[in-house]
Structure formats: C-alpha cells, structure tokens
Amino acid sequence: MTERLVASNRNEQPMETVLRHVDLNLLTVFAAVMQEQNMTRAAVRLGMSQPAVSNAVARLKNMFDDELFVRSGRGIQPTLRAQHLFTPLRQALQLVQNELPEASFCPHSSQRTFGVAMASPLDLRLGPSLSQLVTEQGEGIKLAMTNPLNMDVAAELSQQTIDFYIGYQHLPTSEFEAELLFCDQLVAVTKAQRYAPEVELTPQLIRQSPHAKLAMGYELESILDIFYQRHPVAEVAYTGYSCSDLLYMVSQSNLITVLPSWLAQRYAQRWPLKIHSLPFFEQGFDAFINWHCGRSNDQGHQWLKNLILSTYQ
Image 1 (cartoon, helix red, strand yellow):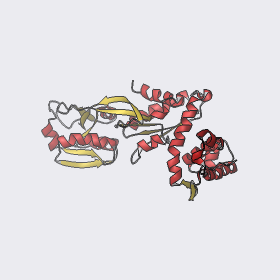
Image 2 (cartoon, one colour):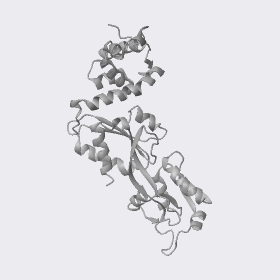
Image 3 (tube, helix red, strand yellow):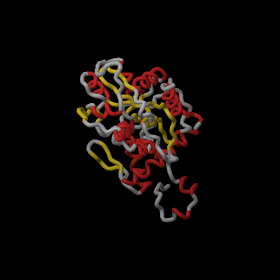
Image 4 (tube, rainbow, N blue to C red):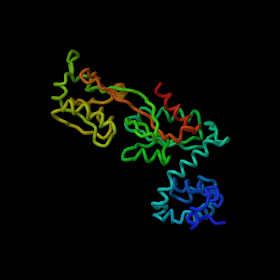
C-alpha cells in the first residue's frame, strides 16, 4: 500500500481513494516534530519511542516526496516544503480534535501548555494574576508567556505556536478574532515634589521640560509617538528600556515622562511620584486579546480566553 502522494495517476483518483492510502496518524507526528524541532522532545510529547517517531518521519518523507527535516546542530530544521505544509495541516488537525466527543476540556486534569504573547508593559498588568489563576484552576496546565517583540504574531497565531496575542493592536484580517480588554489614557508623571501643588502642567511647560522616554522597539512606543508628535519636547534627557526604569528615574530627578494611566498608578504606590492628567490630549488607546478564528471551538482555548477577560472585569 503506497503512501506516496505524487503518484502519476493522482489527479485521476477521487480524494477518498487517495486518503485511503494515507496513514493520517502520521500527520500528528509531523505536527509534533514541527513544534518541538527535536525528535526526542516530539517523542515525549506524543508518548512514543524515539525510533517510532524516526520511522514515522521516514514515512512522511516518502509521503510528501521531500526531506521535510534536516539536521541543524543538536536539533532539526524544517525544509521550505515542511513550513508550507505545517499551517494548513495543523489547522486541520485542530478542527478535527475540536469536534471529537472526547475533546472536552477539564482544567483540573489537563496537562496542556498554552502560549500567550503579551506586549510590554501589558505583561506586568496581566502576567502575575493570570499565572496565579491558571495555577489555582489547573495545576497541570503550563502557561508559556512571551514578549512579542520582533515576533510575527499573525504567523505565530496561524501556525498555532501561540494561542493568544495581547497587545495594542487589533489584527485586521478576517483570519483573526479579537476582544477589547480595556481602554486607557496617557498621563504625565513627575517626582512628587517636582512642582508646587498649584502648578498646572500646560503643553508649553511639558514641551520645555526635560523628558524620560521609552526606547525604540516597543508597541507602546507607537502610542507615545502620537503624543510626542503633537507636543515635541525640547530635550530627551534619558532613554530607558523598560517603563520601570523610566519611572524610577523620574522619581529621583526633575524629569517628566508620559505613560499609560494604569502603569503610572501602579508605580506611584511604590515610589514618590505625582500623576498629572493631560486634558489637552484626550485621545485614548485600547488593548486587545487576539486569536486565530480556527481555535474558536476549542474548549481549552475558550477557557483561557474567559480567564484572561475576567482579570479585566
């Protein structure tokens, strides 16, 4: 019984006939090897022996008439053909899994790993509380949180290497779904004793004061850029690589910074800071949770989404 999909009479056979000659169980092996990029880890993930996984990969190579994986250091690297195959096959497997009767999800017994990419500084707001909630409801569940800096989040969601992307972007295409997490405003932050209580931070005073700004490369930067384009400042005296760096520097100096209200309020409880509203800049901004529409029927996916949404209610 041949598994080769490139037979000369392939186009003459009905789809059902072609699929009868294919061991569809091999596709789960392909997905695991693609995700782990390592035969040993894929074997552990599948509950198989490593020789069995190696044998399945050899059959997959014959099936698709391609090497699929090549050695790279201590691991393996997918070929271009394998990369092209992975997204549609992974989505198809997920759709089948979602419809199976035994696919019901129970957080108390699940051993599943969920991937969540969270843009900074939203990871500070969500990460600790989400991690605690997941531990309380499902001790066997693992949460892999990562920063999406330099990540193609649309591709990662499509390939299902991550389950959710949380950030200041609403992914625009019909391939994805999103829900609003919260809305916020920008505020100015100074050292607590920087100005007398009666002093109002006018646009002119803000432009003339030395500022602490966030370094390039963060999603938040695009929101801050809108403010600074409308109110260009005379001097940037400090550039920090995290919001906590900025706020600590401000608490110890005469610098001003502009950041989201929720973030300023959190650090004002720790350091001597004063928060100033910006009535002349009323533009708000939104944070979203995004996911691939192919995961909408996944009960585990729905569970985690509802858990994330509950942290903002």
